[in-house]
Structure formats: structure tokens, C-alpha cells
Amino acid sequence: MKRSLTVVLGAVLLTCTAWPAFAAAPVEKIQAMLARPPVLCGRFDQSKQLVGIKKPLLSNGRFCVVNGKGVLWRTLQPFPNTLRLKRDEIVQMQGGRVAMRMDAKQEPVVRMINSVLFSLLAGDLSQLETLFELDGSVQGNSWKVALKAREPALAKAIGTLALTGGAYVKTVSIDEASGDHTEISFSALQSGSGAMSAEEGAAFE
Image 1 (tube, rainbow, N blue to C red):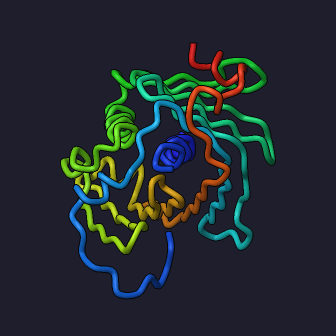
Image 2: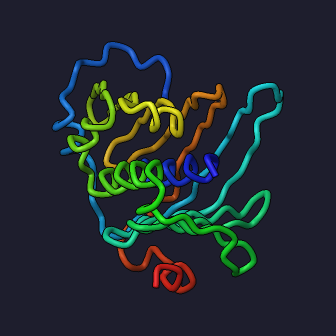
């Protein structure tokens, strides 16, 4: 389940090394750079390095973020799998059937993660400061942010995060407390109602 939560977090957050001479920038400046389209869809590529395993686990697929409705994360390779997150629940679908459902009202960690996800959906980085220590910097039209969870339960579930982007988040780096490491990159981004297929739209109903 922790893997699913990490995947969803990556979908919403939608790291780069050795960026020289970044000037310190307040969270408000980075927040102002973020676009807030009602619908955002695109491709994701994920690499997950597990402790003790040499080869990373690779996957890719499509995601859609719909403001006010939630996130749809569809893994296409290596195995089809769909994860749908709404404000009060997380549902995993396999073969058109519900394989797992978690009620955010009953699961404290899921509730915290949902709070993180929907703050990010709204482009509200200032709200995240209640749950994370934020360290951000900006250069031109690009920015990077490091987030370290304040709550032990959230740190255990998510770990630490590093994001880079511009108008949208481009890459996400996740270091879990277990030692596992995940890199997610986003591409082919489209916004607006035409970004979603009919099947993707139906999944939010």
C-alpha cells in the first residue's frame, strides 16, 4: 500500500542535481509560478530503486489531475493498473474491478497524505508548511523545492521529497525511510477539458 501512496503523491506533485548559484526564494514566489489548470494530463516515467536490488523497477503510463475531483494514475507498463484518488478515498482498480479501497476518514496516514495531495492540487505550498519543512530556490523560470515531513507518521509513509519545475512540476525525487528511492518525470503535458479521454473522464464519475 505504501508503494501506491508514493505513486499517487508523485502524480500530484507533477530532481535535478548540480543547479549552480540558486538564489534563495520564498515559497510565495514559487507558488506564483505554478499554473493551476482545472485539468492536467500527461505521461509519467517512474524508476524505483529498492534496497538490496541492483536493477530499478521501471514503469510508465498516464495521469490526470482534475481540480476538485482528484487524481487518476494509470500504469500501462509493465502491468496495467489504475489508481484513483478522491478527497475521501483511494481506490485501486485492476481489470475493471476494485482491488483495494481505503477510506481516508478511517486511516490517519491516508488522511494526512490526502491533505498533502489536495494542497498541491491547489498550488498551495504555504499550506504544506504545516506538514513539511520547505527549502526552496528559484533561477529564472525554474525552481526547486525540498520537503521534509514534520510528522513522524508522514515521514515514515512518504520520506523526503525533492521537486523541480516551472509552470508545472517536472520531476519528483522521493527518498523513503526504508531506503528505497523513486524518481518520477512528467512529459507531454496537456491542460483543459480536451486533455482527458472519455474513459478517463468516466473514471472520475
